[in-house]
Length: 179
Image (tube, rainbow, N blue to C red; front, side, top):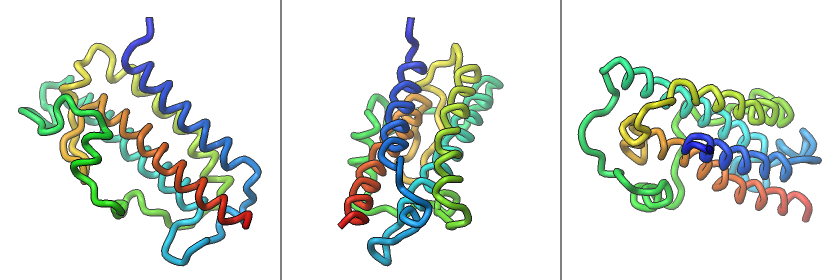
């Protein structure tokens, strides 16, 4: 029987696969081209996704460990209880948000390097199964810097949502590159 965690991880893998397919054939040179001076290029979007997802993994893992030891990161009610990630983002985000410094691209490596790290995030997420096993996902909470308190289920939904959001951005950039 498929668990909630399995279902969420499957959704994340599917979203990740769509981006990998979209970026297939984009050269390192194309990946580093800017279509507008104030917008990220494809390489930077992928780097951002990796950095953000690694950070999200750390927070989910930490929240699970602390919950298990009786010292939860968050206790008490959450204004996001029962909401989907789409509803939470709609109520908490401005149209164009700034990434936190920890998830802001530096341009240090090429698209190929970041794409490899991006694909490797599936393995990282797979390792969340054990720490989250038999825990009430709705009570394992770590606040997000924009969204407020997100439980483990919502955080996993956020990873999928975030990848899907940037898929559209990459598709738009790629379209501009071929003009």
